[in-house]
Amino acid sequence: MPKRAKELTATAVERLKADGEKNRRVMVGPSDCAGLHLRLEGGTKSWALRIKVGDKRRDIGLGPYNGKVGMTDEEAGRADGLSLAEARTKARELRRMARETGAVVSPTAAVREAVRAEAQAAFIDAAKAKTFKECADLCVADKRGEWKSAKHELQWMATLKTYAFPKLGPLPVGTIDRGLVLDVLRPIWNTKNETASRLRGRIETILNWAKVNGYRDGDNPAAWKGNLEHSLSKRQKLTRGHHAALPHAKIGTFMAELTQREGVAAKALHFAILCASRSQEVRLAKFDEFDLEAQLWVIPAERMKAGKEHHVPLSEAAVAIVAAQKAVKIKGNDYVFPAPRGGKLSDMSLTAVLKRMDYADLTQHGFRSTFRDWAGETTAFPREVIEHALAHQIADKAEAAYQRGTLFPKRVKLMEEWAKRCSSADAVGGNVVSLKGAA
Figure 1 (cartoon, helix red, strand yellow):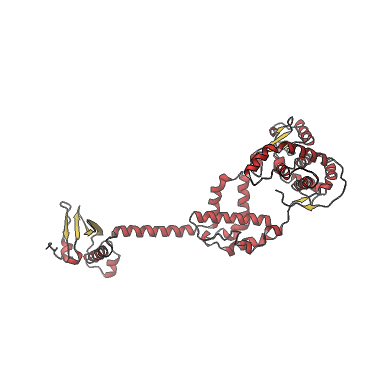
Figure 2 (figure 1 turned 180 degrees about the horizontal axis):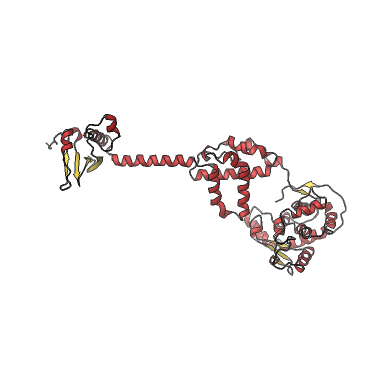
């Protein structure tokens, strides 16, 4: 029979010396704790259990020795290390585990796992305490490289600061729910729908960012589909186009009045109408973008809504405006339509011309609709030609690539006919209508 270890008492174990001169192991018994021993190494005393798991024998460390002599049970429970009784309890548990499962988990490994789990839980708690404002700042920092300009970021943050941060900013992002999102959107949804719609999208983006980065769980309460669409009016039912436009039947009379106006802003508006261009494309136009001999204007991608370079065929009338501006070019200012005090025209300068002409209900952008209606209703040019003239994107990329090369000659003819219409007398009158579907 295998030799059984003598069952030592707590006093005997306490008397064992760890002098650092000779390392040794002392089995402490009893039989149901076979393999339990005290390691006396380097002046320290620690517990270990020698046990066979499957076909392999291994030593499992249980932790340092602490006799806990003279301590109360409460004090012993708080003290580090294991007494003899506590070591025997752990040894019995590990031996039972080995018999029943064929495996054991080291107490020190279990402690490490518990510490890791506790740290993870603390991290999760801290993460979920991250505020909406903090997440918004981090989200904006991550997305900064996607935006065309610093102005885009300023617009993003301005909307959030005005409408979202007062209610959502200090709240833990994990607590933002559907009701809170609606509290932000409802006050402006019917009166400032364009702003509210953009705000909703920005809140949705921030909450998606927070979820991906571990700061919140669950569905996005700012999502539109299957969510807010059931609580807020659909946008198209609220705004049937926000750019007032002149009926094309009245464009001749209007342009005759416009050509009588003095000033750079009036010339910029005239040019924008002839080219069916957006305000920013015209106000920031520079002379090096134009080839007047080829009657071509190349707008850089960074100034286009679609982010792609756009080639604009210039009518004779449009070329004449640019040539006249070049003749009076201000030294050091490369803008075709410079502000009176230097630099670029403001984004309200073209609208101001309309107000001075007593057309306060019109917008510069609305003349793109005037052009679209005229081209679609009175000419035989295909839809694709007209859409390209307006720099609208075509959904099918292959089709768009093909048309980009084949439609330009037709666009040249289209823009020349539009210039002729703008300089012609009107046959009939009309009323101001709303722009539908303009970009």
